[in-house]
Image 1 (spheres, rainbow, N blue to C red):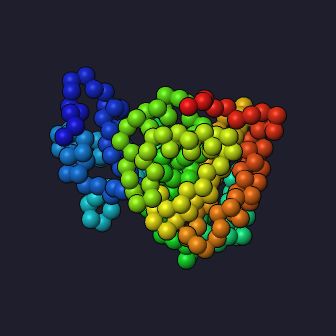
Image 2 (spheres, rainbow, N blue to C red):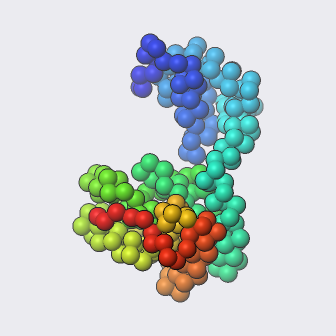
Amino acid sequence: MPRTNEPGRTVSSRLLEVLFAFSRDQPCLSVADLTQMTGMSRATVRRLVLELVSVGALQRDDTGRYTVGLRLWQLGTLAPLTESLRTLAQPFLEDLYTALQQHVQLAVLEGQEAVIIERLSAPGALPLASHVGGRQPLHCSGVGKVLLSHADQELIDKILSGTLRRYTDRTVVDPAELRSQIADCRRTGTAIVRGEFTDDAESVATRIMDGQGRVVAALSVVVRAGSVRPHAVLPSVVTSGLALSRMLGWRPARSPAANAP
């Protein structure tokens, strides 16, 4: 159990501890759940939850459990990077979606994972493990490999020296092979991933750059294996990525900022 009852902790840090307990996998929690997850006393958790409910940050459902409130969601949409990216990317996502009728998604790097900030999915598309707001590993997802390949050297070394989870029989977990893939991805700005994160899924991803040449996001199309040839999709994905990068101020004379592995 986390030790979060240390003397000297501020009320704001305790409030944030309660809020950060909610996730895509656990969007609905009871006071008992929050008590166990935070390590705070039940009385403290209950008091904090009631305060959060009173300002609209949490809301109580009919079963007595709590979910993130509308006001907190509205606050989250103000995050400048993700919201501007989502807004600018929407026409390109829609064009790719209309043409392919598969999954089209946009992701950014957060910590040691890729976070999906937008996705359009056709009704009959292959089911995926994550949703908008969900996280994907850097070593075996299309958007993850693009983001990892343009990350700083410290993060690359940390990921490759750690335990690399094998999600499917095709997941690449050999550090030497991954370093080779990272070098290729940095050179081309693209990644094609076949069945490494989700069985029967193939991902075609490309980088999104800003005005300073920094890679700030990754765009990908995820198709059912065998439904579309990845290399046939690649030009459309790259074109959309370059167009979106131009909207963010990138120009061809500015090479992508990256560190060598």
